[in-house]
Image (cartoon, rainbow, N blue to C red):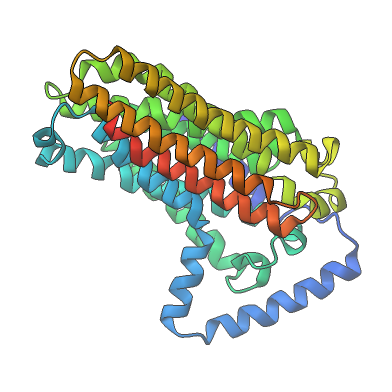
Length: 353
């Protein structure tokens, strides 16, 4: 935990010195003036509008992903409905979910601080890039969330401390100098997969199992490697797809991505194919498990889950076939749908018995 805090603070200090200024000075001065005007206007907005801006600063798709994953893993670990609705489970979810959401804000907020100039090209609607949220206030939010997440983590279990420490270290290393792993496509993808695929699922499951014992399912632990592998593959799809709409800004600022190297259509086809293949493999695995189930009720439940996951896979494939991979806006819309598939998989996870 202390090592992670040290790494995060070092990177945070570099980030707070300001993002790398790689664009032409004249353009940046113009963007800076526009952002300054927007920041002044933001100060005059109603409180409700400021709250909406702050929520957008959290990057809601990642925020919701964390909010869904923690309760779903608890439900997956619980041996019965009584265990799931117990006070022990509620306390366990809260002690993991609150610091996890705060850490999510730290990671996504730090990324926006470090990429503000790139975002003015790729994502000008984001709060910091547009000036709706000032850099000063964004720094305060990011710093406060890091401190609060680690402080609450110290009062939680060892698995929660591990996922917070690993996420803080990798999140800071991904976005901020001097490491800035996002400059390497491979390291950037690995950091996303390690956090979303491995740390989140393994650590939050371990936390849930420890707090629900002896009312935790033994069978869930045996299947956990499959759960980790499944969400890791979805993490790879996310890592590949997220850069496809951003090639213009990444090219301007010299950020190396697979989308720049291989071209938008090729990487989009790879990422969408991996998404459909992973969902389809999950549906097939549930079908096989249904055939092997001894109890008819369990077989029917697994078959229903497989059909639901297969439906998600077919829908994703149909949507991907209609996307113009050369259109950044169309790909960005599909990227958001990818995250909805991610949410749906966590929603189905508790029913895997």
